[in-house]
Image 1 (cartoon, helix red, strand yellow):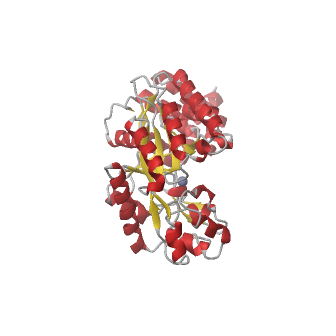
Image 2 (image 1 turned 90 degrees about the horizontal axis):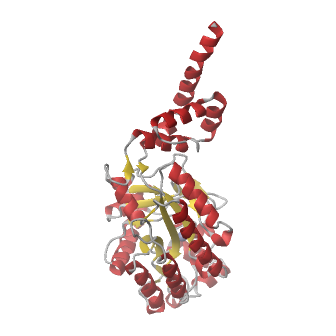
Image 3 (image 1 turned 120 degrees about the vertical axis):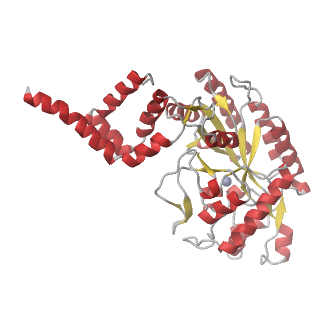
Length: 402
Ligand SMILES: [Zn+2]
């Protein structure tokens, strides 16, 4: 009898210890706002200057998106991470690769692509986002081009070369990866570079970019502060800040996680994009649907990362069919699904009492439980100690479902 009572009292004490051990992640998971509806945003990076046939690829994407509507009558939005320039090959060749010259998206060579981008924006199915003036740091690109024949050929292959073909470390814009490990950019160079890309974006789309997606998700605090100072309101992250490339060329990331709605330098709002829809790499509609299911249970938005190469290369027909299947099945499985742009999502997080955020205890508790299920050691201890079942019961009693 006494043993039974002791065991009964010991169990909550063990659960309390586990919760205290994970107090940090538990607090973060509780504080992150909970969305009232499932939200799906397909984020496609790397669009901008390229071969003329990309205009047709954009039109086909827009036509696919325009076939669908959510319960509020809104069409799906594909956010386009835009690169605003490529190397001006002739001008750079004339300097024997000593001085960089850009060929901007406003160049007649890209008129068809720009027109297709604008058609999609006008139709409400594309939302432009700043990916960068270029998908590299120009001085680092030229430094490598002077010693590497393949990079040199790429620089001189304009006007329609694809930045995806550059060595991965060089595709990071906000570090000097001409030698590895990468080194930080001179601070004095950052603001002028941000000014240049924000000004060109504004001249193209009539307003400063509301959302920025750092190329290869490598960026630093001074860059973030410069974007915020020039009016950028939201930053798409992979859930961590990566600040450089290591000796092996891989992104070096900080351990501290970032979460949706968190604010950074200059009050910029972080969004988290950590799931993928890359049909060309085997991440098809099912991967997107599984992510939507998981994020919805967590009260989080489902931002799916994808890239233009899926929709412009040899697999473009198949990729478009997968997008069609993803949208159709997402609407079938989640009748209360909401389509929106990342800019709208960030605005929603900034309004403390927004309609799209759940404020009832049951929804918040249910989302918290699913968020904590992503914390590896917590999940194991919660299962072994019975805390998991206790939390499930608590959610049921609160009316928050399983
Ligand atoms: Zn990119």
